[in-house]
Length: 334
Ligand code: AHG
Ligand code: MN
Ligand code: MN
Image 1 (tube, rainbow, N blue to C red):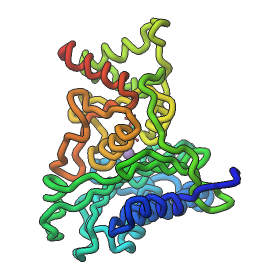
Image 2 (image 1 turned 30 degrees about the vertical axis):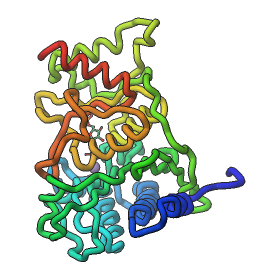
Image 3 (image 1 turned 90 degrees about the vertical axis):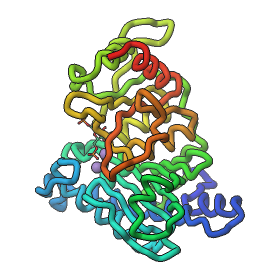
């Protein structure tokens, strides 16, 4: 361990001080996410030993059969943020409707969360994640209007993800820079491990479910053919990396460059991934690190959600790679 370890708590306190103190409660919320992530780390690690793998038997609002860990993770996150008193409402992948938490004036934020991302990996000891974002509430201030605010006036102010891999890493952007904190299991703290992350402009990895290739538009297929066409001068062919957990695949692209794609296809005409708790939070992180996040036709962060579980196509990662993908989409027609 380095001599001068910086904990998540100290880093957030320092950011709060630099911002002049004040009533901005985002540091408290990020810290709470850290606590939820520690609890989830413990449960994910021991799940095979305590009967917490496999299916719960219910379907979530997206029609996926919930895993036991999906249900558990949702419970941990909802409980953690309910107890802060700072959250007015929560949109979760695992809950049908936006859930109103508090009508108090202190409850200034809306949380959108994918409590367990990549849950098909749970039973094979693969990487999983948690994806989160916080919106500051808009002007109405009335609890009943939370969904309307999310649609019209709420502002995305912080977002990030937790990756439960060989170690647990929490990555977030509160509007300034992207930092990553790695959980030191012995100390029991998230410690700063990657400061002011920059996503390389180019990369030689691509990440997509190629099993869906024949359902894609011809322009998307042309791009997938392009990246594996040998051209040593431009670093092609690119190497394929795909884990089935967006948070894990995105983390590689963020740190090492490349592109993650989940385009629309015949089964998912709007794309598979959900705007509020998958695409937009990761777009907020990647753009702050100098990368790009696109639907293929425009910025993800320009989209407004009309409903809690709205889907969107996603191309995200190195700015040059995502721009190239956009050119294929724009110029080759479908
Ligand atoms: P979730 O487990 O939260 O439903 O998310 C799964 C998502 C994402 O993590 C991943 O990139 C993608 O779905 C995998 O989809 P395919 O199985 O179609 O590749
Ligand atoms: Mn997910
Ligand atoms: Mn999920």
